[in-house]
Amino acid sequence: MRGGPSVLGIVLAGGEGKRLMPLTADRAKPAVTFGGMYRLVDFVLSSLVNGDILRICVLTQYKSHSLDRHVTTTWRMSSLLGNYVTPVPAQQRLGRRWYLGSADAILQSLNLVNDEQPDYIAVFGADHVYRMDPRQMLQRHIESGAGVTVAGIKVPRAEASSFGIITPASDGARVERFLEKPTDPPGLPGDPGRVFASMGNYLFSTKVLVDALYRDAEDERSVHDMGGSILPMLTERGVAQLYDFDENHVPGESARQHGYWRDVGTIDTYYEAHMDLIPDRPVFDLDNRRWPIYTHPGQLPPARFIGAGIASESIISPGCVVRGQVTRSVLSPGVMVGEGAVVQGSVLHDNVRIGRGAVVRGSILDKNVDVPPGATIGVNPERDQELYTVSKNGVIALGKGQPVL
Image (cartoon, rainbow, N blue to C red):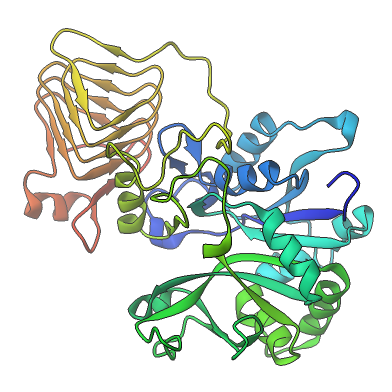
C-alpha cells in the first residue's frame, strides 16, 4: 500500500489437486479453468490486487507450465511503480529436494521476503472461488497486534473433516485451538451445528512468520504445512487471531452474494460452484464492475447462435458457436455445439466440440474433447461408469482431449 504498511503477497499454488482428477492430470489445480474464461488462481490474485497488495509471488511446483504461462502472460503489473505478480518455481535453495509442504515452500523462498523486507506477509491459497477485500483483514491484524490472523468462515460441522478448523477463545477473537481436518470437532457456542473453517488465507507479521518457519524446519516430526504445522504452533503461543469472513464487505456485492466462498477441491464441489454462477440472481456474480475478476480475455470473436441454436440460463464465452440447445451450462471459449445437439447442466472447457445430434448431460468436459455426432454422455449411467470418471454425486468428468466412445 502506497504510504501505508508494506505487504508482500505469497500465493501457494503448488497443489497437485488429486481429488479434481482428471482435470488436474495435466496441470496444477490453480490452473484449472473456472467460470468459462478464468483460471482458479485468478480469484485470489484479483482479490489481492483489488485490495492494493501489488507485489505478489506465486509459488508453484506440480505440473506448473500452464499456470506459469497464464500468470506471466495475464498478470502484468506496472514495473514503473515496482509492482509485480511473478510465478516462483521450486528452486531447491536448501538442498536437493522439492517442497515438503506449504510451510517448507515459503521457507525455501525466503529470499523473496529478504528482498522486499515487508512489514506484513499475506499468505493466501490459490484454489478457492470468492471475493475478499484483504485490506479489512490487514487492518484488523494491525489493530490486534497478533502474530498471525486467520480468515475463517462458518461451515456445517459435518464438513469439518475437509478443512482446518478454528476454535475461537471466549473473546471470539483469539484462536484457542487449530485442528487440521478433525473428524469430531466441538461446535460453536450457541451454534453447535457449525464450526469455523480456515479459508487458507493468513496475514502474518513478518518476523513472526520467519521465526516460525525456522522453528518448524528444525522439527523432524513436522509435516511442514501451514495448516498442519505453523498455525498450531502459533496458536499454542497465543499469537493467532481469527478473522470472521462474514465481516468482510466487498464493494459492489449484494446481500445475496455476501460471504460467498467455495472450496472447489472435488469434482462435485467444482461442478456445484459452476451451477452457482448461472441463475437469474446468482449467489456468486462474475459481473461486479467495482471488484472485477481479472483474466486474459483472449483474441476471439463474440459468441454466435446459428439456425435453431439457443442457450438459456447459461454462460457462453467468446468464440463459441451454438447450433443446438444449451441449458444451465457454462461454455468456455471456442466451444462448438452442433445442430440438434443437446447440452444440459454441463461445464465445457476450451475448444470442446459437440457433434450433430449428440447429448451431454451433467458433465464436465476438459479442453479439446470431441464428442462425435450422435454420441451420448450422461444418458446411460452404467455405460458412463465403465468409460469415464464419475463423481460421488454422479457428475461425469472427462480429461483433456479424452476420447468419447
